[in-house]
Image (cartoon, rainbow, N blue to C red; front, side):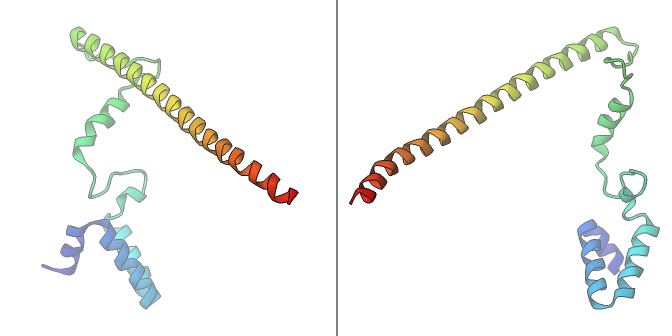
Length: 137
């Protein structure tokens, strides 16, 4: 197995590490590695938003769904009324759950902030009488 195959098996981090080490040891070698990565398509995600060699094919469905968005607040119909109704209901339910979750996070942040503020005020109240007695003495 050649060096290129070994680096491909590890993925982008190995190629990036090789490029950085090449720049450190001998900068023309780093430039050569950089041009090789760009020219071979190993860093394809850097150009025009393509997924590159290590993209996740299971995410393609989500991209297709986004492409089908009509821009009018609704998806284009799939041609199957039952599926379209199911999709609309599921999206509505997910949006409601997301809204509830964000409200929960807001309440959680507020209660945490309140607890920290109460702790600060309690520490300040404990500190204030002792500071007053120190200055009086």
